[in-house]
Image (cartoon, rainbow, N blue to C red):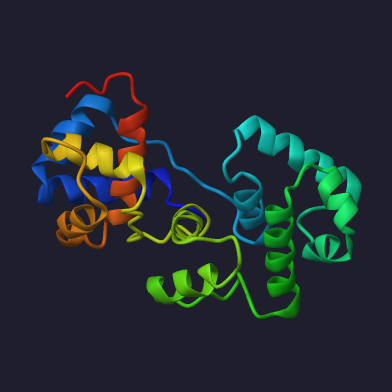
Length: 207
C-alpha cells in the first residue's frame, strides 16, 4: 500500500528542515492526503486502460471489460479472452496488446508483483520490461501501490511545474534539473512528489 498520512507528514517535516521553501509551501496548502492504490496486477491493468483517456472513459471501459471477460483481478481472464471481446470493451489495438502482454508476464510468473526487487531502479526496470508500462507508470505504481518512500517521478510535468514554483525558479525546470535538485531530499522524495501534486491541485497555490 502507499505512504500513510503519518508517513507523509513525517517525511514532509524532515523535508521542510532540509528545504525551507517546502516549509512555506506546506504552510500555504497544508499536508496532502495519502494516495494509495492496491498492490498487484489490477492496478497496473488500470494504468494501461487509463492511458490517454479521461478517468470516466477508463472507468467505463473497465466495467464493460469486466462484464465481458470476468473479474479483472485474474490475469487469466485477459489471456483467455478473444480479441473481439477486448475490442468490444473499448480497448484499442495497442492497449489490447499491452493488456495481453501484462497478463502473460504475470500468469507465466516472469513478473511477480508480490516480490519485486527491493532496489527501486531494479524494480522500475522489471516493470518497464512489460509492453505498455513506461517509467512514469512504474514509478507511480511503486509510490502509490507499494509505498516506496524515495520514488521521484521527475519526468512528470506537474512535478516539474510545482518544483519550479516552490523553489522560485523563473520557469519549469527540466527533468534533469528536477532530478538534480531533489538529490539532497533523499530518502523523502516520494512524499515530495505527492506534495507537488497536492500543491498543483490546490486553489490556494499563489506564488
